[in-house]
Amino acid sequence: MGISHSTARWVAPLSFAIDFAAQQYGMLSSPNMKDVHDANLSFWSPQPYFIAGFFFPQQLFQLAWLYRLYKLDPSKSAKDKEEAQIMVDFVPYYAVGNICIATWMVFWNASALKTANVFVLINSLTQLYYIFGRLPRMNTRSTSSVLTHIVSKTFAGIGVLDFLHNGSVAYFNHQGPNTVVKVLTGVGFGALASCSDWIFGGCLVYDLVALAVGQRGIGETGWSNLLGIFAVGTAGIVTAKNWVWHPYVKEDLAAGYEAAPAEDTV
Image 1 (cartoon, rainbow, N blue to C red):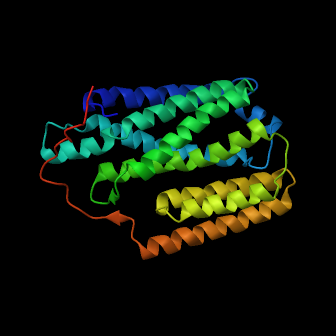
Image 2: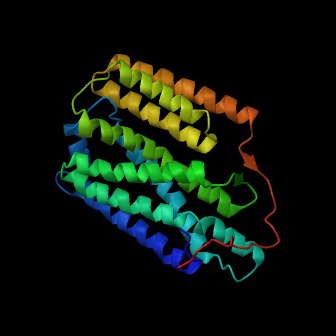
């Protein structure tokens, strides 16, 4: 799934622009995304303004990441080549995510919730695969590594909330939580927290707070309280895990970077 830096420099910003345009459509159309949200509530419906509050700073980090991706010149030095490759590796997953979110918006605003959910699933699973299956540990001495971790893990973090929210309204619209839902929520977030760093773990806690506030707003006070307990428990697991095992490294970049023999570029 590898691409060249020259390709990545236009694929990444193009996908960002498509997603950004779709978000404007979602906010300005009638019905808008919040109208659809308010008409379709379930046991994993968050407070919608938490999602907006998350995306604004996250998009600023995306812009910083895109700017660095564009400005880096891999031919300048071995260090710059490695810095660029760290970012280029994420670009295909980043682009898939942006296209999926943009497509989701079209179907969401049309209230085609089951179709919209397909694109949420693709995005969420893609981002989770990247951060757990492909992304190396953050190197705090590499700006490219730090920015890529922030962007990819916040993408995955909000992807978890999207997965829960869209799945619940697509298949369990206007239903409250049963025991199975409560157990799956606690176990699922606990399991993810146990293998999360501070960034993704912080997103998980944010997701639970968004759910707790959202459920309280629709009258599910008991469920909201339990979600708040899950948020505290998740924060505790993330804190304990990262105190015991430091998730980041401090390493000078290698003298040079060589692509793996099987690495294909386009």
